[in-house]
Length: 192
Image (cartoon, rainbow, N blue to C red; front, side):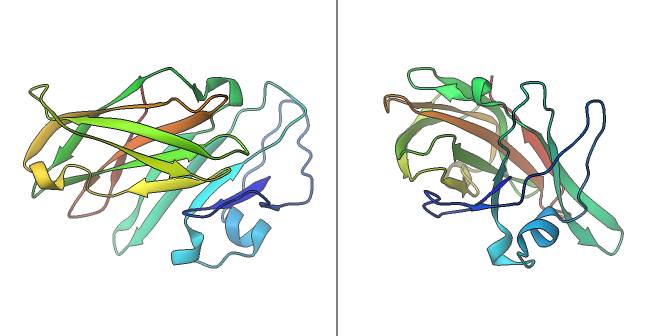
């Protein structure tokens, strides 16, 4: 397992000791960052995990959450196999972006390779109007979260973002998060 802190060049990521899970069994960590990597809660606990496996049928799932007086509000994200990453030259669309007094929207992007890459995107409001095109350079195994991606165009209800890379040999993951402003309860939106 590799720990990939956000906004960092992860060319030499921190690695855990090997973990063995018997066929048909599951393993669950209540606090994988604290238990496995000794990362404390807070700003330093932002990032992603990568698993290297000798099995192609490994299934992964993650839930990150906020504690509140009334319980937890969490976001679930399924593990993404390397073969399911978005390859260079393929465009994917992330839907459902909402920005108003009730909701805010973020986008997360992860470089799925050990080489630097450039991610490009176009943002569209719900009427199909493109509002801008931009890009970000991600270092090896780098990841970033862009917050309130439609704040300048608010109110937006149903905006979308097209994401792609032209970096040869690159592959990446991306997802949207639509959060309730009152509770910070997120909804995960995977690219299509």
